[in-house]
Amino acid sequence: MSAPPVYEAPGSALPAYSPGRRAHGGSRGTTEHIYSLNDADNNKKLRATLKVFSSASTPASLPIYVEGDRIVGSLAIHVPNGEKIVRVCILMRGEIAVGGPNWQPTETFKFLDISMPLWSKSSASPPLSGDCHWPLSINIPKDVVLPDFKQPYANRTYSLPQTFLERNSKVSAFYNLFARITLSRNLFHQDVELQTSFVYVPALRPDPPSRLRQLAYRSNTSIPGPEIDAEGWYTCPTALIKGTVFNARKVQVQCVLFLSKPLSYTRGSVIPCSLTYYCLDRQTLDLISTPSTIDVRLHRQVTYAPFSNNSVDYAVATNDTEECGRAVWWPTSRRSCPPDMRTFEGEIHLAKTLKPTSAISQFSLKYFVVMMPAEVVGFSSADTQPLLRQEVEIGTIFPKGPKPRSYAPRSYGKH
Image (cartoon, rainbow, N blue to C red; front, side, top):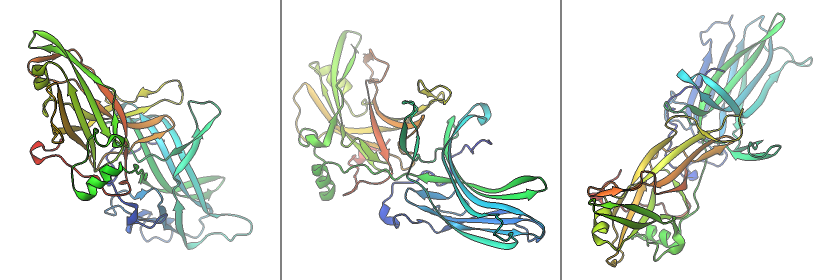
């Protein structure tokens, strides 16, 4: 198999959207994409034109389809005299490829393989000749059933992943659409194909936030913190910040990070956060607990397990985990704190270009909120590894109800 294109597919990084922008199960777009074979006006050569419509911004971009869409278009061929057609069909494929040096694929896995026949030679059908035309309307399935590599002899249903094509990644998930024309040439058959890659976007919608947070979004008021809206926050395991202050004394600070429920967020929005520090040493507390010293990040991790070895996942690239954003923080205004406690509000701003969470067979794309040790002048941390790591999901559709809002004061900016 030839290597898939390794690049940021035009239009692949779609922002969050509302399904109200399209009719369910229909084609969302009106942009026409045309792919031609021997497009010169020559009646002595086989010619073919594949047309599809999508929601891409320009005809030069890859076609874009969102879960629930159909691929709508047409296939036209001109069959010259003497050319014998055996069959005409449309193929839709989804594959995962792992690349080696210079992106030579070392392994591929086909997770989607659909064939739609348009015409086939039979004793009852006259041969094709001249100009022929077929309309196309192809459903893109929401999910597929594949062998569960963790449970022998068992199957599992997986949602289709979003197209994933990036220069620096050694693994790609991609989709192709083929128009295949099979010719009879003497004693053998020859396939002639028109092909295009396309971008697929799953419809992943987080559940709505808590009732109190929705009320705050609607009324444009501050969102209630964990002490008021306990049902609206997830409490991460307590992190311990250990180190030495001014090379003089060892200290320990308790840190509790809260993330808004559900732990699923739409790209293009924010992850609301809350953070509380506890320490009897007030000098240490003042040193460590400031908006500029809190280091909470969003990491993306891509993993893939080879089909030749089903025992364990492994990182597919030297940089399989990358930072996708950092939280911004500001002192809470909800309450006054006792001397041994500091509280902060924060947000992680989610870029519209984030690929959503995906997992199919031995390929996965996951996100984690990670808290790193503080780097502060006068404080030497005893830790170099993350203090905590909490998995979260990134979706593509805003939850039902009011859209999430950003509350970060302008003076604190955005990372």
